[in-house]
Length: 369
Image (cartoon, rainbow, N blue to C red; front, top):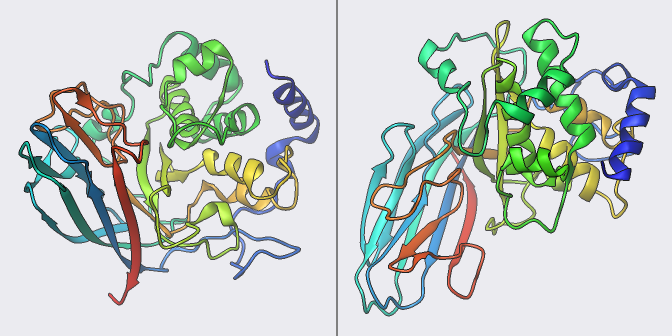
């Protein structure tokens, strides 16, 4: 185990992490101060236009591209419509099984400057744990328990989950134990490309629990599923700065091409679907200040650590909650998740992280409802 993680685990055991934290949902403060606060409140509805512009190199042969659309409609998010323009053949498609919506575009060979521009309007609000419980149907809960290619629920994943939840009886106690375990043992690794891969079996087998949101929150989701608690990743993008002054909990500019962020939800019998985000706790610990903060009882970290167990801020939009997604019309393998624009040609996937062959710009604008 990494020496840093050993030291942090020792400190956490001595401090009693959950007991040392302040109340999770106090009144909001407008900016970070000597007494930082993180207290999202429901009812703060905002409306945004999110625009994605994808530009590809001149096509030698047939090329296909996909841009994700907000597909989640729930008590905290309402998609209001999409529009798009392209010099290819563009249409809205869905993967069918999991309800992932995308704009798919076919570009003919010999096109000098293929592009697609997609704008989606969406309303969002913050989430708190005090919302009325809304039961979900049995098939949805079963889906949120199943293993996926990157989220197995047996072997080392189940062994780790059982060890971390030893003595916990209720579903909420198990989730609390796993949230604490992930925050203490996993860490933000800024050098990871994009949002990470989310291959939790490899993470646990190698002992390398460093990653980004799609790694850390996938680990949390997989561990929850392994002990019988329905959980799911929620793939989306930050739209605006945080109202609480934390730089790492919001977008830093109007250009959002690096603002993709995966969150998590768990289904608790007493609360229904409940917001979680241990990955953002790790991000604030690692990147909010020049020094890596390694204690969850640090005054800067404690409000976020407490608040992101049950709440999240509405400056973020969800695309979907899907795993193992086969893009309609793609010749490639299913993707672990869909949170980025994608494209492929006869040679396979274009590298969405390489600006020389794959250029996209995402921006958001707040509008009157």
